[in-house]
Amino acid sequence: MTSPSPTLQTSAESEHASSRRWWTLSVVALAQLMVVLDSTVVNIALPAAQADLGFSNGDRQWIITAYSLAFGSLLLLGGRLSDLIGRKRTFIIGLVGFAASSAIGGAAGTFGMLVAARAAQGAFGALLAPTALAVLTTTFTIPKERARAFGVFGAIAGAGGAVGLLLGGFLTEKLDWRWNLYINVIIAIVAVIGASIFVANMHRTGPRPKLDIPGTLIVSGALFSLVYGFSNAETDGWDSPLTWGFLAAAGVLLIAFVLWQRRAAHPLLPLSIVLDRNRGAAYSSVLIAGAGMFGIFLFVTYYLQASLGYSPIQTGLSFLPMIGMLVLAAQLSTNIFVPRFGPKIMVPFGMTLGVIGMIYLTHLDLNSTYAADVLPPLLILGFAMGSIMPASMQTATLGVDRHFAGVASAMVNTSQQVGGSIGTALLNTLAATAATDYIASHTPPSARVMAEAAVHSYATAYWWGAGFFAFGAVLAALLFRRRGQGLSLSHDPAPAATTDDAPEPVVAH
Image 1 (cartoon, rainbow, N blue to C red):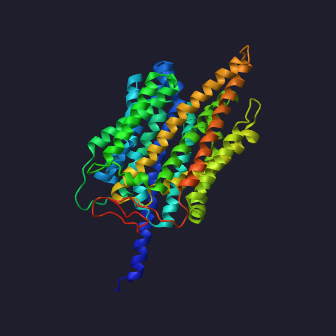
Image 2: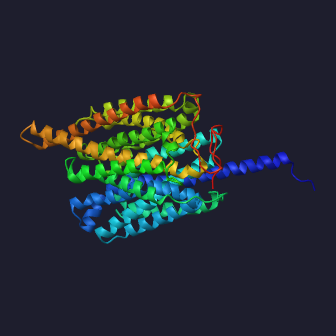
Image 3: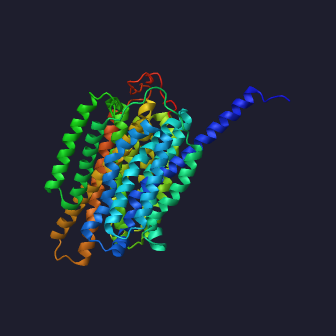
């Protein structure tokens, strides 16, 4: 009996490896969707949860803040742990922990129990999110496949918030607010099974580096102070001592972190990762897009529900065309436009579309209709995010030494989280001030005046969102290298470091 030819064996092995990679993408995408949508799916459930558990309006913000504080402050630690203890192990731990925290939150009988569960969700999300991106980075090393994979991942990162609004509305109306948390258990079970089968479990070669404990404590404190400072600005205002105290502490700690990383034997975040011009541009673009996008989800949601009288489900459905356009743009961008034009063209192009979409939204009033006035800017903004996110996320992790893929991926999530925090605090404050000024200049404050003041406040937020995108367009055009210019790669102090001749990361453990 003759054995198969080497050519046929090689072809079969190649097809099997390719199939495994795409199944890995499905698992990673599912985990990323769970983390991203959880930042908005709970928002719609808040009124029902408040009525059920009986907490005050002042306490309500902690349901959101507990998650964002834990998530934002522990991201770099989560990314580095995935580098140290292995991607697959960290990924599964993150999934199981996130599911358990969600189950506890769903079953919460008190306000304190719900807040604690949300904080635990944030902590495990900080472990899961950068690990998911690191798995993707180190699994897809063939440029064409890498582009397609990051197109899917970028689309999920951009659309997850809108999916959360749709899912949250459906679950709250048709089932119970608790299912906004229970749904994560179902998603996590599927993802754990998939990860166990498809995510590669490769072992580290050479000595295991140590965790930078001082650096971890410093940067976690800095990120906590930064996120808390912006969250406090949203609730107590910019003149609050707590706001400025925490923001000042964040600045001091970030400077201390940079100084420590320059001398640490095993740095948590090698500065060469963020100081590379292309990666710095990519992180900045993700941060700015995150800040600008907040205006879309938050204020368009307010407008549709409060001004036009939409139900939660109708509001979620209203974002579906935007999601479809975002997914389409992400695929076109990564498969056609980014390979041809590079991020130096595509990211500023997407930012410019963001400016146009935001300015379009400023024309909304109490008599606007969805088809003529709301749908067109949502489609424009969907295409904008589909052009920005995949190109930025792919560039942010391109060429990073495999031993630092996790922490480099964590910087993407950190940028998005910080951008969202800045957007939350700044746009909410500006909108509230605009509403107050409008009412003061249109007395007496009738119901009509109050409704018009709300629309005016949204328009103010959109104008500032347009400003964010405009700044992002200029910054990206200046920072991103032209195509053909080499990417300066980060260097691992260990002998296994990559070189400037290796444009793609090698498969990691």
